[in-house]
Amino acid sequence: MSPAVLTLAATTGPGFLSPTGVEIAFALVGLATLGAAAITVTTKQLVHAALWLVVALGGIAVEYLLLTAEFIAWVQVLIYLGSVVVLLLFGLMLTKAPIGPSPDADSGNRPIALGVAVVAAAALVWVVVDAFRTTWIDLDGPVQGSTKVSGEILFRHWVLPFEALSVLLLAALIGAIVLSHRTDPADPDPAAPGATGLNARATAARPTAPRPTDKGPR
Amino acid sequence: MHLAYPAVLAALLFCTGLYGVLARRNAILVLMSVELMLNAVNLNLVAFDVWLRDTLHAGQALTLFTIAIAAAEIGIGLAIVLMVYRNRGTSDIDRLRDTAEGHEPPPAAPDSSTAANQQSEVTA
Image: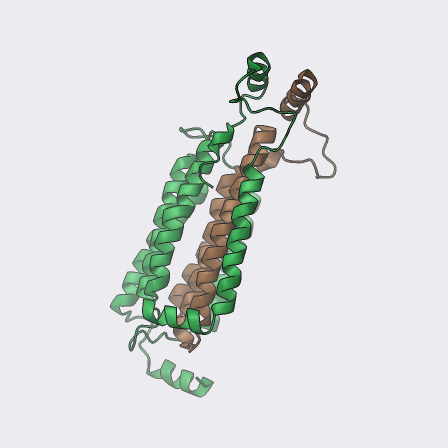
């Protein structure tokens, strides 16, 4: 689409002060998503952070639906809300995160982080608003992100990256298994039979070490 | 829809995740913030794909690939965090200063588990 057409569409497009229903819904869901994200990065309770992350990621899935990208919305629900958050909760449990509020959830460089984030947000929002002031997304017409369209483009034009990605996922799976596998031969399995006194001492000396059977989430 | 809505939302979400990455101390909370940043980028990709009406739908394909890579990243990251926690007894990234210059090695707390390891090895 040439710039002239874009400018023409911008001049004939709707105005800032008359938002459509989709825009109002997008803004409301976006506010909820931002609030949930802010609570996620500021709350003192670690498990609550993971649960607010569910709200934020679900809000982003709704935004995908509003942008007519249905397939990506459901993939977001399946992978992020279904597996990533569960993995994070398992990680919190395996590292024995406290249930109540933990006062040391934030590090000492919090003011610096806040300053960097505010400056970055101001710069990005200013640039983005200035750049796309006269740009409109045409949401009418055929749905651009349905499962049919996504499957066609994915398996017609993007087959090779797709297959490479499956190899990468396999490598990541094996890597996670290798990383979480206890390979120290001098440190016997505490659950192994025999040598109970030694195992009791080893377990007592390392009270925080998770059992090898805790490799469940992988 | 005005393109500024998803673009501004993505920018603000990215900066929220940036704050979380910089301000959090627990490694798993840092991973959560990284997920927020990745989702902001995904939102931008989808919005620009819908705006450009690309026939290849490169934005949506790249979004799917990013989601898959983020899943792999969270798996590997949690495995690393669990291994660090198993070896050090903590997952606070402030205390992992072994490769930092100008910091003395922390006195007692992280060394106790290492000493206990050596002791158990000697006993074995």
